[in-house]
Image 1: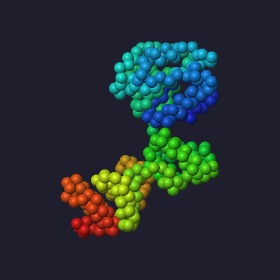
Image 2: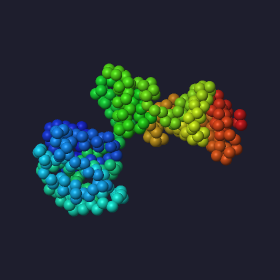
Image 3: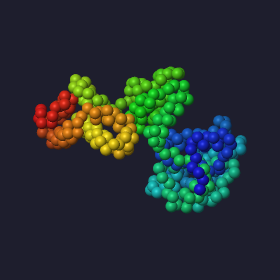
Image 4: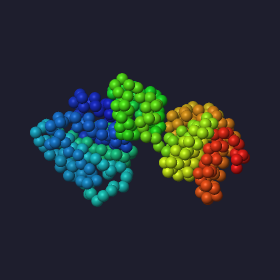
Length: 350
């Protein structure tokens, strides 16, 4: 079985003209898959691509037709590049559509690929079905590139590298906030990063404020801001944040659910800190972004354990009253925000 290549290793091989007749790209990070495809496609001059680069979707065409294309001689050039996407038959996933794929034709081609063609097989799935003979055959004969979604830590390094190549810097706080807001999805991150690079200009610096200003906030972000006001006993700002959410026609029950979730996280962080967990361990245990764990840890300092436990019970009671129509939902939420931000005990203002 051949060693799995990284994108950088693939680019280095392409640059050194170390080329394979068959490439297998699999994984769910489509941005990296496209980067790998572009690297391989660069083996053709721009004026050759119209004639000698073809892209096929296996949801719409049979694999045997793709093999016929791969066996077709190049026109006005030395090689063809044939890309076949959505090769779901290499996974355990149930295939969609009614296309009949003759895998014997595919297997025969893999055993003896045309020396003038490069076949690129793209599988946008997290796992291949290792039980299948064709998968074992491909892994032993093709160059394989896995493009899984990056970890937060690796995505942060990717952001730093991309910013540096564009002639700007990005602070750690900015990277953390961006990843917290968007997740480690490179396609989305690259577009937002490009926008911020244009905004700060050459030699500029992307800061937390830049991200806050230019990257769209989610409802969860807005609720987190509300929580920050509550934690620091800024009652007026907390209420203003709440009224702003109501002007956006957000549903009070949904706001309350997110508010409850944030306080559950704060409580969870406090309990895990007591057990000696570090920031990364807490993030992993609670299945949240490390940046969210870091901010929750700061918020946890403002409350004692009994207050948090009592309020988690209060949240459940408020949720019940909202859903059963015992009181006006907006009024219930207003009262809860006031109690929380002013540090009232649960027994008061009931």
